[in-house]
Length: 228
Image 1 (cartoon, rainbow, N blue to C red):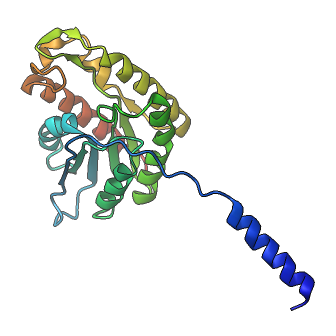
Image 2: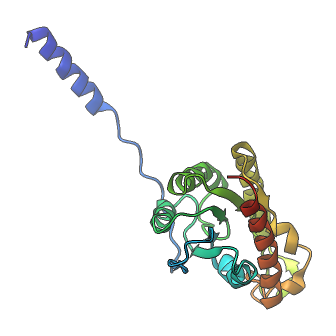
Image 3: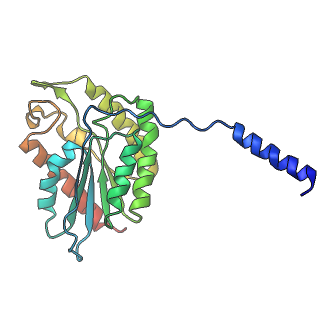
């Protein structure tokens, strides 16, 4: 190889080596992290499949959705404490999407990860959308807004964390608008109804979970009835 070519190659190598590697994402974990995956009906071949992605709120309304769609769709769930901003969330979503073909994915994230800034939260939303679309090509997507938080033991009062929930919902709505993904507004469904909350102010009681499950099931039926 001519000397000039060798020098050129060496220069390119040194220049590339001098470029600093991108900083790894900041990972904020809760004291206890958990993951709940439920994928039933693997022998069912004549019904569409739905995946609910969310947290313990999603886990609470899952049974109602499953009952409402019985005989119409197989309903699966991925409930997790991982938050947008945490690469572990995307790993979990990839894991579940690899288990089966899904026709509709109804997803939410926003109740956990308070250690992340709102900027970090919104920056991570497109990555979640891209991960779902890659893992479930052709599936209809529906985003669910995050529900409000009420004061522990005084559920007639909204907790200050609800302001952060509102900010996250606004950021997510902007992204979903650009991505042409419809929003199922669960926040609006319960924000004026403290009687639907359990005493901890975060979770819904049986009546509240049923109300949300009915609205989720209705949104899923619309998605399943439309063209892909």
